[in-house]
Length: 204
Image (cartoon, rainbow, N blue to C red):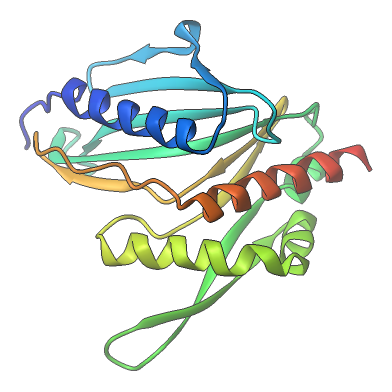
């Protein structure tokens, strides 16, 4: 079982990096203190965005639990989730239609190489597959995540009041400060295009 990890210094470094990234994109943002979460093994911050299809970014860092014994490991994970506020409702059909995840295509018998991806899931996956502008920046995002030991995955989780787009997560060990895996500017624009597709789809 692992010892408790001091997440606060890692969080401060990550939040600072995220603020600088948003400033470099010319995006106006502010941290909502009412959405701040401080748990024993968890921290969250929520950034409200202006002038974007993405309404906000939830930054989360948490110490990973040990499923078999119920304790904690010496590892942590940090990720950014992009919030799109829409009135989706509780109907299961509507929620299922907005679920999607990338399915990676690889080649090679021993050393797997990621060469492409497609979207699988509900009807929104078909919409995203038709948008070829998403491929190059998000494939780059997935490849960067894999080469840096991060989680190479992207998915959409619909909720009653909107949808979360979850990007690649950063993995760390003990109190070591690992830089937050931020998207490239093109990848961030791709996330914003996904948000626009979600907005357009929920109007239909």
